[in-house]
Length: 537
Image (tube, rainbow, N blue to C red; front, side):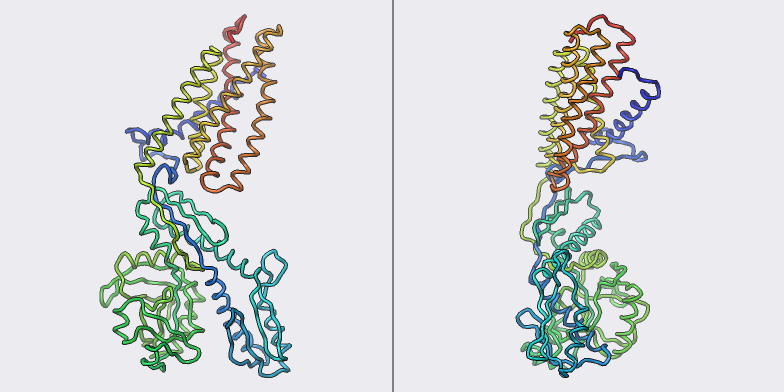
Protein backbone atom coordinates (compact mmCIF):
# COMPACT_ATOMS: atom_id res chain seq x y z
CA UNK A 1 0.00 0.00 0.00
CA UNK A 2 2.88 2.41 0.73
CA UNK A 3 5.17 1.39 -2.14
CA UNK A 4 5.31 3.92 -4.96
CA UNK A 5 7.72 3.22 -7.83
CA UNK A 6 9.24 6.18 -9.63
CA UNK A 7 7.15 5.76 -12.77
CA UNK A 8 3.95 5.86 -10.73
CA UNK A 9 5.02 9.05 -8.93
CA UNK A 10 5.91 10.66 -12.25
CA UNK A 11 2.53 9.69 -13.71
CA UNK A 12 0.55 11.07 -10.76
CA UNK A 13 2.48 14.36 -10.76
CA UNK A 14 2.19 14.72 -14.55
CA UNK A 15 -1.56 14.18 -14.34
CA UNK A 16 -2.08 16.74 -11.59
CA UNK A 17 0.22 19.33 -13.20
CA UNK A 18 -1.52 18.93 -16.56
CA UNK A 19 -4.94 19.70 -15.12
CA UNK A 20 -3.51 22.48 -12.97
CA UNK A 21 -2.06 24.17 -16.07
CA UNK A 22 -5.41 23.77 -17.85
CA UNK A 23 -7.00 25.69 -14.97
CA UNK A 24 -4.65 28.68 -15.33
CA UNK A 25 -6.55 30.48 -18.16
CA UNK A 26 -9.71 30.40 -16.06
CA UNK A 27 -7.92 31.60 -12.92
CA UNK A 28 -6.07 34.36 -14.76
CA UNK A 29 -9.34 35.62 -16.25
CA UNK A 30 -10.31 36.68 -12.73
CA UNK A 31 -7.20 38.89 -12.52
CA UNK A 32 -5.55 41.53 -14.72
CA UNK A 33 -2.94 39.07 -16.00
CA UNK A 34 -3.64 37.90 -19.55
CA UNK A 35 -3.01 34.41 -20.86
CA UNK A 36 -0.92 34.43 -24.09
CA UNK A 37 -3.19 34.18 -27.12
CA UNK A 38 -0.64 32.01 -28.93
CA UNK A 39 -1.11 29.23 -26.36
CA UNK A 40 -4.16 26.98 -26.02
CA UNK A 41 -6.55 28.53 -23.55
CA UNK A 42 -9.26 26.12 -22.35
CA UNK A 43 -11.66 28.08 -20.22
CA UNK A 44 -14.80 27.53 -18.19
CA UNK A 45 -17.85 29.24 -19.63
CA UNK A 46 -20.07 31.13 -17.22
CA UNK A 47 -23.80 30.49 -17.11
CA UNK A 48 -26.58 33.04 -17.39
CA UNK A 49 -26.70 33.66 -13.63
CA UNK A 50 -22.97 34.47 -13.53
CA UNK A 51 -22.22 36.14 -16.86
CA UNK A 52 -25.59 37.81 -17.39
CA UNK A 53 -27.47 37.44 -20.65
CA UNK A 54 -30.90 36.83 -22.08
CA UNK A 55 -33.60 34.23 -21.50
CA UNK A 56 -36.61 33.53 -23.67
CA UNK A 57 -39.45 31.10 -23.10
CA UNK A 58 -40.93 30.04 -26.44
CA UNK A 59 -44.19 28.18 -27.05
CA UNK A 60 -45.30 26.30 -30.16
CA UNK A 61 -48.81 26.39 -31.60
CA UNK A 62 -50.29 22.88 -31.37
CA UNK A 63 -53.18 23.74 -33.69
CA UNK A 64 -50.73 24.82 -36.38
CA UNK A 65 -49.12 21.38 -36.38
CA UNK A 66 -52.55 19.80 -36.79
CA UNK A 67 -53.40 22.12 -39.70
CA UNK A 68 -50.05 21.50 -41.40
CA UNK A 69 -50.56 17.75 -41.24
CA UNK A 70 -54.04 18.20 -42.70
CA UNK A 71 -52.76 20.26 -45.64
CA UNK A 72 -49.86 17.89 -46.25
CA UNK A 73 -52.12 14.86 -46.26
CA UNK A 74 -54.52 16.55 -48.70
CA UNK A 75 -51.73 17.07 -51.21
CA UNK A 76 -50.43 13.52 -50.68
CA UNK A 77 -53.91 12.08 -51.22
CA UNK A 78 -54.40 13.97 -54.49
CA UNK A 79 -50.97 12.93 -55.79
CA UNK A 80 -51.36 9.32 -54.69
CA UNK A 81 -54.72 8.84 -56.38
CA UNK A 82 -53.63 10.77 -59.48
CA UNK A 83 -50.69 8.45 -60.17
CA UNK A 84 -52.66 5.26 -59.34
CA UNK A 85 -53.05 2.78 -62.18
CA UNK A 86 -55.78 3.18 -63.22
CA UNK A 87 -56.22 6.74 -61.99
CA UNK A 88 -58.78 7.13 -59.21
CA UNK A 89 -61.06 10.12 -59.70
CA UNK A 90 -62.36 11.87 -56.57
CA UNK A 91 -64.68 14.78 -55.84
CA UNK A 92 -63.89 17.95 -53.93
CA UNK A 93 -61.79 17.46 -50.82
CA UNK A 94 -63.19 18.89 -47.58
CA UNK A 95 -61.05 19.71 -44.53
CA UNK A 96 -63.82 20.94 -42.25
CA UNK A 97 -63.87 19.67 -38.69
CA UNK A 98 -60.15 18.90 -38.76
CA UNK A 99 -60.61 15.82 -40.91
CA UNK A 100 -60.12 15.00 -44.58
CA UNK A 101 -63.16 13.76 -46.53
CA UNK A 102 -63.91 13.18 -50.22
CA UNK A 103 -65.95 10.90 -52.45
CA UNK A 104 -64.61 8.32 -54.90
CA UNK A 105 -66.50 8.90 -58.14
CA UNK A 106 -66.47 5.21 -59.10
CA UNK A 107 -67.64 3.05 -56.16
CA UNK A 108 -65.84 0.10 -57.73
CA UNK A 109 -62.51 1.83 -56.99
CA UNK A 110 -63.12 2.31 -53.24
CA UNK A 111 -61.06 -0.76 -52.27
CA UNK A 112 -58.20 0.36 -54.53
CA UNK A 113 -58.36 3.85 -53.02
CA UNK A 114 -58.31 2.41 -49.50
CA UNK A 115 -55.25 0.29 -50.31
CA UNK A 116 -53.45 3.27 -51.86
CA UNK A 117 -54.20 5.57 -48.93
CA UNK A 118 -53.24 3.01 -46.29
CA UNK A 119 -49.65 3.42 -47.47
CA UNK A 120 -49.81 7.10 -46.45
CA UNK A 121 -50.46 6.22 -42.81
CA UNK A 122 -47.74 5.05 -40.45
CA UNK A 123 -47.36 4.00 -36.86
CA UNK A 124 -47.53 6.80 -34.28
CA UNK A 125 -44.20 6.37 -32.51
CA UNK A 126 -44.22 3.54 -29.95
CA UNK A 127 -47.96 3.81 -29.25
CA UNK A 128 -48.87 0.84 -31.44
CA UNK A 129 -51.54 2.90 -33.20
CA UNK A 130 -51.72 4.57 -36.62
CA UNK A 131 -51.29 8.29 -37.08
CA UNK A 132 -54.47 8.50 -39.21
CA UNK A 133 -57.77 6.61 -39.07
CA UNK A 134 -59.27 5.74 -42.49
CA UNK A 135 -62.97 4.91 -42.78
CA UNK A 136 -65.55 4.59 -45.57
CA UNK A 137 -69.06 6.07 -45.23
CA UNK A 138 -72.08 5.65 -47.48
CA UNK A 139 -70.26 3.27 -49.76
CA UNK A 140 -67.94 5.75 -51.51
CA UNK A 141 -67.14 8.59 -49.08
CA UNK A 142 -63.67 8.28 -47.54
CA UNK A 143 -62.79 10.05 -44.28
CA UNK A 144 -59.28 10.41 -42.84
CA UNK A 145 -59.02 11.57 -39.21
CA UNK A 146 -55.89 12.39 -37.25
CA UNK A 147 -55.44 10.28 -34.13
CA UNK A 148 -54.31 11.83 -30.84
CA UNK A 149 -51.28 9.54 -30.89
CA UNK A 150 -50.40 10.76 -34.37
CA UNK A 151 -50.78 14.41 -33.35
CA UNK A 152 -48.64 13.90 -30.23
CA UNK A 153 -45.97 12.15 -32.28
CA UNK A 154 -45.99 14.94 -34.89
CA UNK A 155 -45.69 17.61 -32.19
CA UNK A 156 -42.81 15.75 -30.57
CA UNK A 157 -40.95 15.53 -33.89
CA UNK A 158 -41.67 19.18 -34.64
CA UNK A 159 -40.34 20.27 -31.25
CA UNK A 160 -37.17 18.21 -31.63
CA UNK A 161 -36.54 19.85 -34.99
CA UNK A 162 -37.37 23.27 -33.54
CA UNK A 163 -34.81 22.84 -30.75
CA UNK A 164 -32.16 21.92 -33.34
CA UNK A 165 -33.03 24.91 -35.54
CA UNK A 166 -32.98 27.28 -32.55
CA UNK A 167 -29.54 25.97 -31.54
CA UNK A 168 -28.18 26.48 -35.07
CA UNK A 169 -29.49 30.05 -35.21
CA UNK A 170 -27.98 30.95 -31.85
CA UNK A 171 -24.65 29.36 -32.80
CA UNK A 172 -24.60 31.53 -35.93
CA UNK A 173 -24.55 34.60 -33.63
CA UNK A 174 -21.22 33.45 -32.19
CA UNK A 175 -22.53 32.91 -28.67
CA UNK A 176 -21.04 30.20 -26.46
CA UNK A 177 -22.73 27.51 -24.42
CA UNK A 178 -26.39 28.46 -24.83
CA UNK A 179 -28.73 26.41 -22.68
CA UNK A 180 -31.61 25.22 -24.88
CA UNK A 181 -34.05 22.67 -23.55
CA UNK A 182 -37.66 21.58 -23.92
CA UNK A 183 -40.16 22.29 -21.18
CA UNK A 184 -43.22 20.09 -21.40
CA UNK A 185 -44.73 19.21 -24.75
CA UNK A 186 -44.74 22.57 -26.57
CA UNK A 187 -42.26 24.93 -24.85
CA UNK A 188 -38.56 25.68 -25.32
CA UNK A 189 -36.44 27.48 -22.73
CA UNK A 190 -33.52 29.43 -24.25
CA UNK A 191 -30.75 30.94 -22.11
CA UNK A 192 -27.87 32.74 -23.84
CA UNK A 193 -25.10 33.90 -21.48
CA UNK A 194 -23.35 37.15 -22.42
CA UNK A 195 -26.05 38.35 -24.83
CA UNK A 196 -27.52 41.61 -23.53
CA UNK A 197 -29.82 42.30 -26.50
CA UNK A 198 -32.83 40.00 -26.11
CA UNK A 199 -34.81 41.84 -28.79
CA UNK A 200 -32.41 40.76 -31.56
CA UNK A 201 -32.54 37.19 -30.25
CA UNK A 202 -36.33 37.36 -30.09
CA UNK A 203 -36.60 38.55 -33.69
CA UNK A 204 -34.23 35.85 -34.93
CA UNK A 205 -35.90 32.98 -33.09
CA UNK A 206 -39.42 34.24 -33.75
CA UNK A 207 -38.92 34.09 -37.51
CA UNK A 208 -40.22 30.77 -38.76
CA UNK A 209 -38.33 31.23 -42.06
CA UNK A 210 -40.82 29.07 -43.94
CA UNK A 211 -40.04 29.95 -47.55
CA UNK A 212 -42.39 29.03 -50.40
CA UNK A 213 -42.63 29.76 -54.12
CA UNK A 214 -46.20 29.60 -55.43
CA UNK A 215 -47.77 30.53 -58.74
CA UNK A 216 -49.94 33.65 -58.78
CA UNK A 217 -53.45 33.20 -60.17
CA UNK A 218 -53.71 36.21 -62.51
CA UNK A 219 -57.29 35.22 -63.35
CA UNK A 220 -58.40 36.34 -59.90
CA UNK A 221 -60.17 39.69 -60.00
CA UNK A 222 -58.51 42.50 -57.93
CA UNK A 223 -61.97 43.59 -56.78
CA UNK A 224 -62.73 40.07 -55.53
CA UNK A 225 -59.33 39.90 -53.82
CA UNK A 226 -60.06 43.12 -51.92
CA UNK A 227 -63.29 41.49 -50.71
CA UNK A 228 -61.46 38.28 -49.75
CA UNK A 229 -62.96 36.22 -52.57
CA UNK A 230 -60.68 33.85 -54.55
CA UNK A 231 -61.32 31.10 -57.12
CA UNK A 232 -61.48 27.47 -55.93
CA UNK A 233 -58.04 25.99 -55.28
CA UNK A 234 -56.54 29.42 -54.44
CA UNK A 235 -55.65 31.12 -51.20
CA UNK A 236 -55.09 34.73 -50.25
CA UNK A 237 -51.61 35.68 -49.02
CA UNK A 238 -51.11 39.27 -47.79
CA UNK A 239 -48.08 41.38 -48.66
CA UNK A 240 -45.45 41.85 -45.98
CA UNK A 241 -45.40 45.63 -46.32
CA UNK A 242 -47.55 48.39 -47.79
CA UNK A 243 -44.90 49.38 -50.33
CA UNK A 244 -45.11 46.08 -52.18
CA UNK A 245 -48.92 46.10 -51.91
CA UNK A 246 -49.02 49.54 -53.54
CA UNK A 247 -46.89 48.30 -56.44
CA UNK A 248 -49.36 45.49 -57.24
CA UNK A 249 -52.48 47.48 -56.35
CA UNK A 250 -53.94 44.90 -53.96
CA UNK A 251 -53.32 44.17 -50.27
CA UNK A 252 -52.87 40.48 -51.04
CA UNK A 253 -52.34 38.02 -53.87
CA UNK A 254 -54.34 34.98 -54.91
CA UNK A 255 -51.92 32.06 -55.26
CA UNK A 256 -52.38 28.37 -56.03
CA UNK A 257 -52.83 26.63 -52.69
CA UNK A 258 -51.21 23.36 -53.69
CA UNK A 259 -48.07 22.75 -55.64
CA UNK A 260 -45.19 25.17 -55.75
CA UNK A 261 -41.79 24.73 -54.11
CA UNK A 262 -40.85 24.86 -50.45
CA UNK A 263 -37.60 26.24 -49.12
CA UNK A 264 -36.67 23.11 -47.18
CA UNK A 265 -34.29 22.12 -50.00
CA UNK A 266 -31.98 25.11 -49.67
CA UNK A 267 -28.27 24.46 -49.27
CA UNK A 268 -27.15 28.05 -48.70
CA UNK A 269 -28.42 31.58 -48.18
CA UNK A 270 -26.41 34.77 -47.83
CA UNK A 271 -26.96 38.50 -47.79
CA UNK A 272 -26.01 40.34 -51.00
CA UNK A 273 -26.93 43.49 -52.93
CA UNK A 274 -29.22 43.54 -55.96
CA UNK A 275 -27.16 44.15 -59.11
CA UNK A 276 -29.83 46.47 -60.58
CA UNK A 277 -31.02 48.51 -57.60
CA UNK A 278 -28.11 47.95 -55.18
CA UNK A 279 -30.71 47.22 -52.51
CA UNK A 280 -30.07 44.51 -49.88
CA UNK A 281 -31.22 41.05 -50.99
CA UNK A 282 -30.78 37.40 -50.09
CA UNK A 283 -29.13 34.96 -52.51
CA UNK A 284 -30.35 31.37 -52.16
CA UNK A 285 -29.07 28.08 -53.57
CA UNK A 286 -31.09 24.86 -53.88
CA UNK A 287 -29.81 21.32 -53.70
CA UNK A 288 -29.97 19.21 -56.87
CA UNK A 289 -33.54 18.04 -56.33
CA UNK A 290 -34.79 21.50 -55.39
CA UNK A 291 -32.91 23.06 -58.31
CA UNK A 292 -34.58 20.67 -60.74
CA UNK A 293 -38.05 21.46 -59.34
CA UNK A 294 -37.34 25.18 -59.52
CA UNK A 295 -36.19 24.84 -63.11
CA UNK A 296 -39.32 22.85 -64.03
CA UNK A 297 -41.61 25.39 -62.35
CA UNK A 298 -40.07 28.37 -64.12
CA UNK A 299 -39.76 26.57 -67.47
CA UNK A 300 -43.44 25.55 -67.51
CA UNK A 301 -44.68 29.00 -66.45
CA UNK A 302 -42.74 31.53 -68.50
CA UNK A 303 -44.42 34.98 -68.57
CA UNK A 304 -46.35 34.15 -65.43
CA UNK A 305 -45.80 35.47 -61.95
CA UNK A 306 -44.75 33.48 -58.92
CA UNK A 307 -44.96 34.75 -55.38
CA UNK A 308 -42.02 34.54 -52.97
CA UNK A 309 -43.72 33.85 -49.64
CA UNK A 310 -41.97 34.01 -46.28
CA UNK A 311 -43.86 33.02 -43.13
CA UNK A 312 -47.24 33.54 -44.81
CA UNK A 313 -46.41 36.98 -46.24
CA UNK A 314 -45.58 37.87 -49.86
CA UNK A 315 -42.14 39.44 -50.18
CA UNK A 316 -42.43 40.00 -53.92
CA UNK A 317 -44.08 38.48 -57.01
CA UNK A 318 -41.69 38.76 -59.96
CA UNK A 319 -42.55 37.74 -63.50
CA UNK A 320 -40.87 34.62 -64.88
CA UNK A 321 -39.36 36.11 -68.04
CA UNK A 322 -37.04 33.19 -68.71
CA UNK A 323 -36.52 29.77 -67.11
CA UNK A 324 -34.33 30.00 -63.99
CA UNK A 325 -31.77 27.23 -64.25
CA UNK A 326 -28.77 26.38 -62.10
CA UNK A 327 -30.59 26.13 -58.78
CA UNK A 328 -29.91 29.72 -57.69
CA UNK A 329 -32.20 32.69 -57.16
CA UNK A 330 -32.37 36.02 -55.39
CA UNK A 331 -35.02 37.17 -52.92
CA UNK A 332 -35.73 40.89 -53.05
CA UNK A 333 -38.03 43.06 -50.99
CA UNK A 334 -37.94 45.96 -48.59
CA UNK A 335 -34.85 44.69 -46.76
CA UNK A 336 -32.24 46.45 -44.69
CA UNK A 337 -28.77 44.93 -44.44
CA UNK A 338 -29.59 43.70 -40.93
CA UNK A 339 -32.95 42.16 -41.85
CA UNK A 340 -31.46 40.52 -44.96
CA UNK A 341 -28.63 39.07 -42.84
CA UNK A 342 -31.08 37.74 -40.26
CA UNK A 343 -33.21 36.16 -43.00
CA UNK A 344 -30.12 34.52 -44.51
CA UNK A 345 -29.18 33.10 -41.08
CA UNK A 346 -32.72 31.81 -40.58
CA UNK A 347 -32.83 30.19 -44.03
CA UNK A 348 -29.39 28.59 -43.61
CA UNK A 349 -30.33 27.09 -40.25
CA UNK A 350 -33.59 25.72 -41.65
CA UNK A 351 -37.20 26.65 -41.24
CA UNK A 352 -38.93 26.13 -37.96
CA UNK A 353 -41.55 23.39 -38.39
CA UNK A 354 -43.96 25.39 -36.23
CA UNK A 355 -44.29 29.02 -35.15
CA UNK A 356 -42.68 29.86 -31.81
CA UNK A 357 -44.21 32.65 -29.72
CA UNK A 358 -42.26 34.37 -26.95
CA UNK A 359 -44.36 34.11 -23.77
CA UNK A 360 -41.65 35.25 -21.32
CA UNK A 361 -38.51 37.35 -21.69
CA UNK A 362 -35.84 38.10 -19.10
CA UNK A 363 -32.51 39.90 -19.09
CA UNK A 364 -29.84 39.29 -16.45
CA UNK A 365 -27.38 42.19 -16.22
CA UNK A 366 -23.63 41.60 -16.25
CA UNK A 367 -23.33 43.56 -12.99
CA UNK A 368 -25.65 41.11 -11.27
CA UNK A 369 -23.62 38.22 -12.66
CA UNK A 370 -20.35 39.76 -11.47
CA UNK A 371 -21.88 40.27 -8.02
CA UNK A 372 -22.91 36.59 -7.95
CA UNK A 373 -19.37 35.53 -8.88
CA UNK A 374 -17.84 37.77 -6.22
CA UNK A 375 -20.14 36.52 -3.47
CA UNK A 376 -19.69 32.90 -4.56
CA UNK A 377 -15.88 33.19 -4.59
CA UNK A 378 -15.89 34.92 -1.19
CA UNK A 379 -18.14 32.25 0.32
CA UNK A 380 -16.02 29.44 -1.10
CA UNK A 381 -12.75 31.15 -0.11
CA UNK A 382 -13.80 31.86 3.49
CA UNK A 383 -15.22 28.37 3.92
CA UNK A 384 -12.10 26.73 2.47
CA UNK A 385 -9.74 28.84 4.61
CA UNK A 386 -11.58 28.00 7.84
CA UNK A 387 -11.70 24.35 6.86
CA UNK A 388 -7.96 24.23 6.12
CA UNK A 389 -7.18 25.93 9.43
CA UNK A 390 -9.29 23.42 11.34
CA UNK A 391 -7.66 20.45 9.57
CA UNK A 392 -4.17 21.79 10.26
CA UNK A 393 -4.87 22.38 13.98
CA UNK A 394 -6.47 18.94 14.35
CA UNK A 395 -4.02 16.74 12.43
CA UNK A 396 -0.75 18.68 12.18
CA UNK A 397 1.50 17.31 9.41
CA UNK A 398 -1.25 15.06 8.12
CA UNK A 399 -3.48 18.12 8.05
CA UNK A 400 -0.94 19.87 5.80
CA UNK A 401 -1.07 16.93 3.40
CA UNK A 402 -4.88 17.10 3.45
CA UNK A 403 -4.82 20.84 2.74
CA UNK A 404 -2.36 20.40 -0.14
CA UNK A 405 -4.63 17.69 -1.55
CA UNK A 406 -7.55 20.10 -1.24
CA UNK A 407 -5.76 22.77 -3.31
CA UNK A 408 -4.75 20.21 -5.93
CA UNK A 409 -8.34 18.96 -5.99
CA UNK A 410 -9.71 22.44 -6.77
CA UNK A 411 -7.15 22.97 -9.54
CA UNK A 412 -7.96 19.59 -11.09
CA UNK A 413 -11.70 20.31 -11.05
CA UNK A 414 -11.15 23.67 -12.79
CA UNK A 415 -8.77 22.06 -15.30
CA UNK A 416 -11.14 19.24 -16.22
CA UNK A 417 -14.09 21.62 -16.54
CA UNK A 418 -11.97 23.90 -18.76
CA UNK A 419 -11.01 21.01 -21.04
CA UNK A 420 -14.62 19.87 -21.32
CA UNK A 421 -15.82 23.43 -21.95
CA UNK A 422 -18.53 23.07 -19.32
CA UNK A 423 -20.66 25.96 -18.12
CA UNK A 424 -20.39 27.08 -14.51
CA UNK A 425 -23.53 28.33 -12.76
CA UNK A 426 -24.37 29.21 -9.16
CA UNK A 427 -25.48 25.60 -8.48
CA UNK A 428 -22.10 24.58 -9.94
CA UNK A 429 -20.35 26.67 -7.30
CA UNK A 430 -22.48 24.84 -4.73
CA UNK A 431 -21.15 21.61 -6.23
CA UNK A 432 -17.63 22.95 -5.73
CA UNK A 433 -18.26 23.58 -2.05
CA UNK A 434 -19.80 20.13 -1.65
CA UNK A 435 -16.77 18.41 -3.22
CA UNK A 436 -14.47 20.34 -0.89
CA UNK A 437 -16.39 18.91 2.04
CA UNK A 438 -16.25 15.43 0.53
CA UNK A 439 -12.48 15.68 0.01
CA UNK A 440 -11.86 16.79 3.58
CA UNK A 441 -14.24 14.13 4.86
CA UNK A 442 -12.12 11.45 3.17
CA UNK A 443 -8.96 12.70 4.91
CA UNK A 444 -10.77 12.83 8.25
CA UNK A 445 -11.77 9.17 7.86
CA UNK A 446 -8.21 8.19 6.98
CA UNK A 447 -6.55 10.14 9.80
CA UNK A 448 -9.04 8.96 12.41
CA UNK A 449 -8.54 5.36 11.32
CA UNK A 450 -4.75 5.79 11.61
CA UNK A 451 -5.28 7.12 15.15
CA UNK A 452 -7.35 4.08 16.05
CA UNK A 453 -4.75 1.67 14.71
CA UNK A 454 -2.03 3.50 16.61
CA UNK A 455 -4.05 3.33 19.83
CA UNK A 456 -4.41 -0.42 19.30
CA UNK A 457 -0.65 -0.74 19.51
CA UNK A 458 0.33 -1.09 15.86
CA UNK A 459 3.62 0.35 14.71
CA UNK A 460 3.70 3.64 12.81
CA UNK A 461 4.05 2.20 9.31
CA UNK A 462 1.48 -0.52 9.98
CA UNK A 463 -0.98 2.03 11.40
CA UNK A 464 -0.68 4.21 8.30
CA UNK A 465 -0.96 1.28 5.91
CA UNK A 466 -3.99 -0.28 7.63
CA UNK A 467 -5.58 3.14 8.13
CA UNK A 468 -5.46 3.96 4.41
CA UNK A 469 -6.56 0.45 3.42
CA UNK A 470 -9.58 0.23 5.72
CA UNK A 471 -10.71 3.85 5.37
CA UNK A 472 -10.49 3.63 1.59
CA UNK A 473 -13.26 1.02 1.55
CA UNK A 474 -15.63 3.30 3.41
CA UNK A 475 -14.63 6.25 1.21
CA UNK A 476 -15.30 4.34 -2.01
CA UNK A 477 -18.64 3.00 -0.73
CA UNK A 478 -19.80 6.49 0.29
CA UNK A 479 -18.77 8.06 -2.99
CA UNK A 480 -20.44 5.36 -5.08
CA UNK A 481 -23.80 6.44 -3.64
CA UNK A 482 -22.93 10.06 -4.48
CA UNK A 483 -21.99 9.05 -8.03
CA UNK A 484 -25.33 7.27 -8.49
CA UNK A 485 -27.22 10.36 -7.31
CA UNK A 486 -25.13 12.67 -9.53
CA UNK A 487 -25.63 10.46 -12.60
CA UNK A 488 -29.39 10.44 -12.08
CA UNK A 489 -29.46 14.23 -11.65
CA UNK A 490 -27.35 14.68 -14.76
CA UNK A 491 -29.51 12.32 -16.84
CA UNK A 492 -32.94 13.50 -15.76
CA UNK A 493 -32.11 17.07 -14.75
CA UNK A 494 -31.81 20.11 -16.98
CA UNK A 495 -30.00 23.44 -16.84
CA UNK A 496 -28.63 24.30 -13.37
CA UNK A 497 -29.45 20.86 -11.96
CA UNK A 498 -27.37 19.18 -14.67
CA UNK A 499 -24.58 21.71 -14.12
CA UNK A 500 -24.53 20.88 -10.41
CA UNK A 501 -24.41 17.16 -11.22
CA UNK A 502 -21.49 17.56 -13.64
CA UNK A 503 -19.40 19.50 -11.12
CA UNK A 504 -20.28 16.96 -8.44
CA UNK A 505 -19.22 14.02 -10.63
CA UNK A 506 -15.91 15.64 -11.52
CA UNK A 507 -15.34 16.62 -7.89
CA UNK A 508 -16.01 13.11 -6.60
CA UNK A 509 -13.42 11.63 -8.98
CA UNK A 510 -10.74 14.23 -8.20
CA UNK A 511 -11.39 14.27 -4.44
CA UNK A 512 -10.96 10.50 -4.18
CA UNK A 513 -7.76 10.69 -6.24
CA UNK A 514 -6.22 13.54 -4.24
CA UNK A 515 -7.47 12.57 -0.77
CA UNK A 516 -6.56 8.88 -1.04
CA UNK A 517 -3.86 8.43 -3.68
CA UNK A 518 -1.89 11.69 -3.54
CA UNK A 519 -1.83 12.02 0.26
CA UNK A 520 -0.81 8.35 0.56
CA UNK A 521 2.11 8.99 -1.79
CA UNK A 522 3.22 12.03 0.21
CA UNK A 523 2.88 10.24 3.55
CA UNK A 524 4.79 7.22 2.22
CA UNK A 525 7.63 9.47 1.08
CA UNK A 526 7.81 11.16 4.46
CA UNK A 527 7.81 7.84 6.34
CA UNK A 528 10.68 6.46 4.27
CA UNK A 529 12.69 9.62 4.71
CA UNK A 530 12.04 10.53 8.36
CA UNK A 531 11.24 7.09 9.82
CA UNK A 532 9.32 8.63 12.75
CA UNK A 533 8.85 6.70 15.97
CA UNK A 534 5.55 8.47 16.74
CA UNK A 535 2.72 10.20 14.90
CA UNK A 536 1.37 13.56 16.06
CA UNK A 537 -2.26 12.86 15.28
